[in-house]
Amino acid sequence: MPELSRQQMQILERLFAAGFRPIAIPPYENALCVRRGECAAVLAPVENGGLRLQAPPSYLVAGNLSVRIQREGREFFVWKKSEMEATVARRAELERFRAELNELLEQGLPQ
Image (cartoon, rainbow, N blue to C red; front, side, top):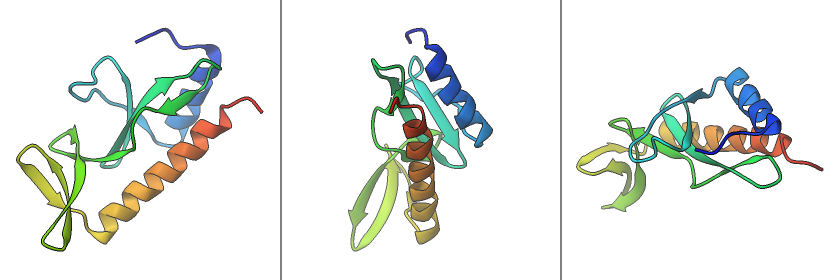
C-alpha cells in the first residue's frame, strides 16, 4: 500500500473517531480496509489526497466480503459456501455504513 498523505491520514482519523476500524480481509491484506459492525469496505487513495471506495461496501460473512444474491425470492449475503439471509436489519446496517462512510470520505475532498 502506498504511503498516505497528511490529508488521507486526517480522513482516517475521522473514520476512526466515527467507530470505523482497520481490518485485513483476504485477498485485500495490502489494501486499506475498514470495518464497523458486520460491514466492511475497501478504500483506495486518490490523486488529490483523498480516499475513495474501491468497491461497494459489503456485509461480512465468515470474515470475508460477501456478495448479495437473490434466490427463490429471498436475498442472501454469500461468500463461497457460507451465507446469511439479507434481512431488513442487515440491509439497513449496510446502508447506514455506506452512507456514513461516503459522507466522511467526501469531507476530505478539496472544495
